[in-house]
Length: 472
Image 1 (cartoon, rainbow, N blue to C red):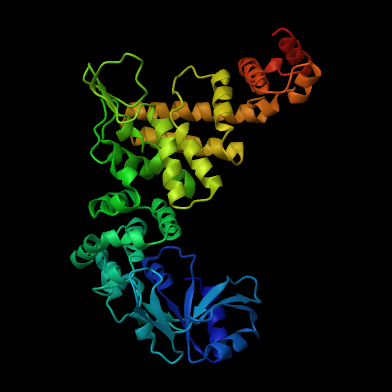
Image 2 (cartoon, rainbow, N blue to C red):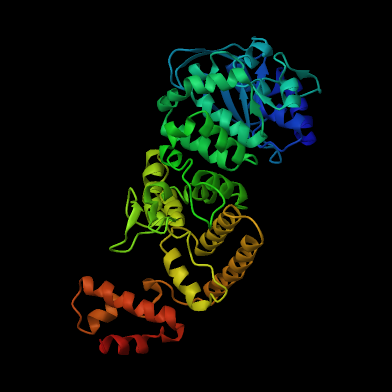
C-alpha cells in the first residue's frame, strides 16, 4: 500500500475529524502483495453534509451517490489519486436484480456492519488509514491463506446474481477456488444471470479475460453452467473434437489461446476468446474420416455435414458480432473484434514476402483504429493461437516465422505503400475525368488497380494508373 497515500490520508483524517478506513479489495491486495488501482474508503463519524464540507477544504468534491452516501474526492495535492469515500451502509435485497436493493447509510454504523454487506469473505476486511490494525470479522485472512473464495452470506448469489460473474472474475484474478457452499450457490442460481443487464455482463467479461488465471476461470465457468446462460455460442464448442493438427477439443483450445495470448488489451483477449467460436457449427467430416472447418468444395461427399456452410473464421466473425451486440459493446469494438476473428487465419509459410504482407494489410485495413496497433494485436492473437494449438517445437517454429512476418508488415507500413483503395494515386474524380460514368464500375476498377498495386507498389503513380484504366 502506497506509504505516501497513507501519510496523506492520516493527515486528512485528523483534519476532517472522521475515522477513515481502507476497505475491500485494496486491503485484500495489500495482504496478497499485489498492486491495486481501486482505492475504496469508508468514513465514520461525519454525516454526508459535514463530510462534504470538511473535504471541500482539501480538494474538489462530487457527490455521485447521494442516496448511498458516496462521495468522489479530488485532492488539491495532485500527486494523490481520486478517492471514492463512502459512509458505512447496509443493504437489503428487494428483488432478484443486481440493482434491486434498499440501501441505508449511517455515519455512526460500526465498520463491521458495513463489511457484512460485501460479496466475498476475502473482500470483507478494513484497515484504519492511520495504523496497521486489520479489522477482519469474517475470517478473510484465513481464506486468503487457504486460497478459498467464499460468499459472505448463504443468499449472496440469489440476492445479487451479478456476484456469480464476480466469483468467476476473482477466480481469474486470484486463482482461488470457491468452497463447496459457494459452488452450490453458483450452480443453484446460475439461471438468474439472465436478470443481469448486458452492460454488467460485458464489464465482468472484460475483467475475466485479463486475469492471470483466466484458464481456470473459463473452465470453472463452463463447469457451473455460466457459459450456457451468457455465452451459449461458446458452450457449443465444449467437447467439439478437432483433427490431427490440434491437440485439444475446440473449447479447451480456445481457453489455452486466451491464456497464451501475451496481449494485455481487453479486446485482443476477447478476440482470442471468440476466434474459433464458429468451429462447432462449420465442422464437417469427409469420406477420409477427418474433421474440417472450412467451406467444403461443391460436390463434396460427407460422413457428417456441417450445421452451417462456410469457413469457421467467417462464420465465427458473424457470431462474434451477434454476441457482442447482445452484450451491448460499442460498434467500434464490435467491428474491431469481429474483424480480428475474421482474419486470424492468415497463412504461415517460410516464404512469406512483401507481396503477402501487403495483401494481409489490405485485409486488416477494414479494422477500425490504428493500423500498427491492429497489426500488433493480430500477431499477439496468432502467437497465442499457435501455442494453444499443438505445443512443441513446431509451434515455436511457427511463432518465429510469424514474428519475422510481423516485422515485414510494420516495414511495409513505414514505407507508406498502398494497401487500400483510398491510398491509390487516383480515385473517383480521375475516373470521371476519363469519362467513366459514376456507379458500381468505380469499385470494380479501383479494386482491380489495388490488386495490381499490391503486387507491385511502383505502379502506384497517377500517370501509370490512368494509363492502366485507359487500357481497360
